[in-house]
Length: 128
Image (tube, rainbow, N blue to C red; front, side, top):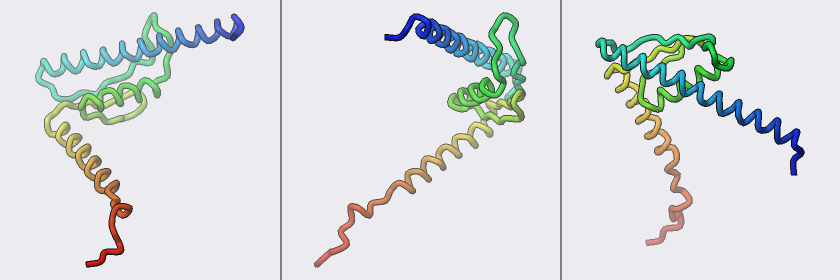
């Protein structure tokens, strides 16, 4: 059994982690809203500035927020380039997205070709 003091500290850490995850999702949703707004006006890209802080929210590190946003947007298929810790270039232009798809396809093919080592299954002592 853990002492009540340790349980209290663990509870505080868990609440902080949950609040941090909610904040990351809030900022990600803000990015997606901006993407939709730019797309509605006929744009195909923009540079997003991660805010240094949000009033009424807990402080956060720009690096971790940057990594989270970039990872999520890339996994959703956007073309994303890290300009700096605070600035992210985001594109949904067909040409840029096709580049990303081609790169993913090449990585998968390369991985598949490198992992096809059937030496263990070959019969080196063939007799006819």
